[in-house]
Length: 184
View: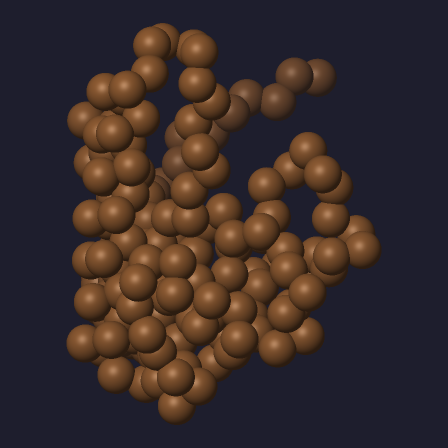
């Protein structure tokens, strides 16, 4: 025998609707609260990232990264390498001017491949004015060398002399901005 479906009691339907509505409202309030908290946390993370970036920039303000510095017999004395780099740009520094110096990366002279450029060399100056003056002299000297080689040589007849290039040590974010600006 077939059972005939009885209509639901309207009061039960309204009671279920009310309970479901309450449950949905409660869950919606919870979701909205989580969205608000998430937005506040994102804002705080952005603020903390900015503080970390600022701190990294501050700690690197006295650093110079030298690119193109050939590996030498002085590698066991990195302060001497820093003094030699400054001397190439007619700038005299003493061991007291350098707080720390070393090659970036873990590559040693024995492991270095001849086809690859040597790893960059980093110097941390005790006084920022010494760092600024060394970078200024290096830029001026490299500009003069580039101008003289482009004036006196035809297109591919003279190989460009390998230069040592000095730059401020930048954070990854600042380096990305710098690279983008150079491309523009």
